[in-house]
Length: 327
Ligand SMILES: C[S@@+](CC[C@H](N)C(=O)[O-])C[C@H]1O[C@@H](n2cnc3c(N)ncnc32)[C@H](O)[C@@H]1O
Image 1 (tube, rainbow, N blue to C red):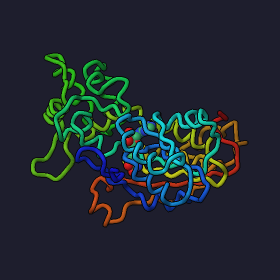
Image 2: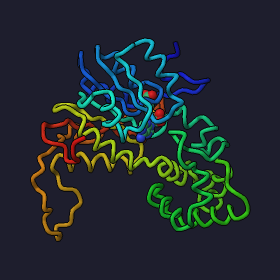
Image 3: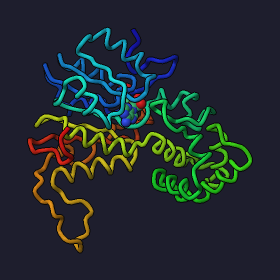
Image 4: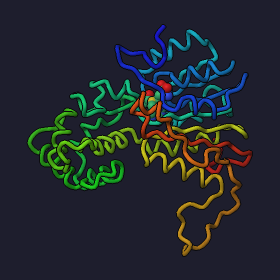
């Protein structure tokens, strides 16, 4: 059997903040848990090893399921792999007759297996088709860059990539695709590098980084998924159940933070000049456990540079009704 975390033809994924997430999930004998981002099963195996419990493991990427098979062989009925999006986890579990669970973990983004496989087209470090779809369905990044209006492209590159030079990038893309379609990660990266200033010999990030991030988030509707996942988790968790989320960029981390603060009853970013909100009847549905996000130790960052941007936030479900309606 392949060891989880080291599974596919020479690629590997090192789980990030795994000890910390497992600690906060409070795994107990007889409990029922959800890993909404199964990946290469690093978190999942740790949950199943922590106590005699049941785990529902969700991933949108069909490529992860050979790893899931090896966990099924080891843990039998205690391990239930489900292909789908965590934004639908309430519906996925409902189909199995499950309405409530004890804790949920989301380790957001892509795994190293996806990033390091050139055929998936996530990275400009390798040349490959411009794909970027985690679920291997829907529009590819290539279809987006070759068909989207210039202004819309600039908007997503700015808002999802936080790229100051978004207009220059979208103009260069539209000019280049006028000659021939942009079909590979290397050709897109070269187009971006020609228009985004980058100090030679500086250790800064590659000029293509932000645009690639924006396209990946857009193609996979990652922020929409996160919003749906947070609302679904609120419905599924029992009182006292924990929601632990590891985010790798500020757009996601901010969303998690704002959701937890709002559900805890803390007003977020509302102008004092606006009239009070009509509905003040909602009781806090979460209590925040990690007042500040948990960051990887220096040792973990050294071992796994990808961990550097990770932030773990955890909140505990109260007994109040979910704010986002029942199933
Ligand atoms: C960072 S990896 C998780 C790694 C995992 N914790 C481990 O230890 O191996 C993220 C995984 O979540 C999956 N994923 C990302 N967004 C998803 C979503 N909205 N629904 C389901 N799976 C998702 C990706 O396909 C990827 O396999």
